[in-house]
Image 1 (tube, rainbow, N blue to C red):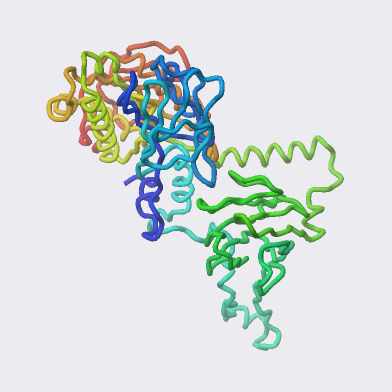
Image 2 (image 1 turned 180 degrees about the vertical axis):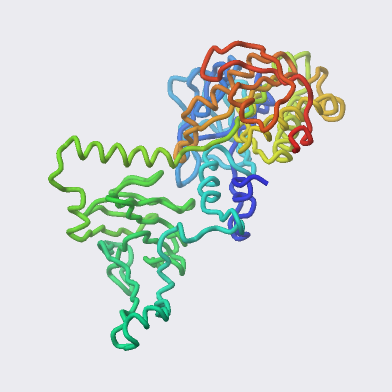
Length: 491
């Protein structure tokens, strides 16, 4: 079992499974297409879907405008905002809107297009880095989380016993043995400004390491207010930086009046608001306030900042293989007077078919972009085995599950490398993701094409032939010439 998928599936039972929001087109020229919502702001409009594009929902139906509506997501929920320049109105559940909240099951109407808001359990690109962070802390021997990497545990304050060798070195005089007395270093405090008139305390200390804020029993800053989540926010000191990160998915965390969507650096005098009532003022000790002030030259400080930035960027690195699965000539597949319900059910079965094979091969579908699926695997071997199985079982799928008059035909592309995945925006910034989408365009119908890097990442040679010379960073492209099984890679 792959490390990152283990970390996801073996989470504590009390953790609720995450839901990924998606849009399913029920009516119009794009009926049956499904789009995964990624990032805080997604444009819905007319145009051709683009491989790897996650911040735009492109529909080919001519009854909607190129810029029809925005889907906005933040810590308080998901909403839709009509764009005034659009020719046709945007309706939600039959009511014309300028802006309104969205919930699972809502139906959005734009021209002749009807879209249903859906949710599925699992992960998307945004969730990928969270899993990798858990996997990085997982012990390779026991499979358990290595809690030592999570910072100090403020509950364990019992001094360790004095070792016998320490006692002997002191000459056997117990009074001369240095006692071990752990302590927490306070760097400031949070002072209640408003919202907790009946609180037992008027201020709370901020310690080096992590200071947790919330209503739960295991936090350092306990706020007895129902609008505050059990773990609402965290303050963490990392190097010279003191950062505030929102943790609640129910109610927002605001800094100086602005909602937070990710971690930000805080300073002396900042005001932290939890939900709609509680406001805390940050008061830092003089040493913490002056930590960034020194006599170094401007160049020296910039070099230090660059090193810190490079380290932060490295935390977003995700190594793995992306497999792009695209339906060939999907418009023709939906044409010929096919019933809308047959189109929708058949395309839902297509997505379930691909998703099931990915899970068999220890992978995960991350993103739906119309009739195209982007899948992620930690190992190149798993990506190629999944692609082979998708093609090998396709005839059975068309016979047993496809309700349409024409068969599903696929093009598959695989590429391997390091991607920079933005946890806040939920998108990959490197070319690995996009390249996988472009590689599949070089595939003949019902074939799999892979990059040189993917081929080199396999533990053994496989039957493959060159279909394109090196034209990009992907190098030469190779077609898989035979279906494979796991035994092909056995020692």
